[in-house]
Length: 94
Image 1 (cartoon, rainbow, N blue to C red):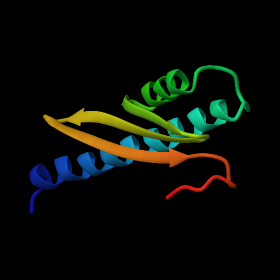
Image 2 (cartoon, one colour; image 1 turned 45 degrees about the horizontal axis):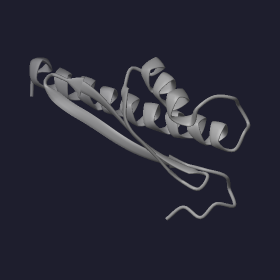
Image 3 (cartoon, one colour; image 1 turned 90 degrees about the vertical axis):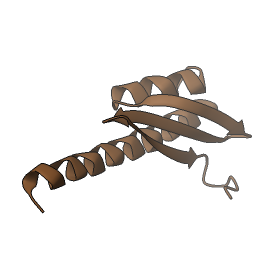
Image 4 (cartoon, one colour; image 1 turned 120 degrees about the vertical axis):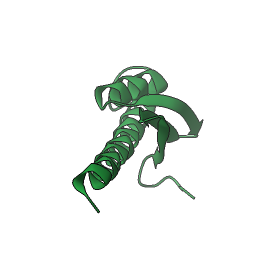
């Protein structure tokens, strides 16, 4: 394989990891708002955190104090997506 064929693959893998990190950070931030640790509206905070990490928040759902978010970023015409869930330690997360 040449650099011309492998470089986009490695860049895509890096972008995918950034989408995963954006989902994780967004879920944690939204859960912090949901339990009252920080002020704000959970899904708005999640969207801000996702954008700060180079992704777009595509979904934000609550089940009690557990928050599930989805993020997305486009890379060479492909939509790279990730989902993350966060909540208090005593919450049941299946």
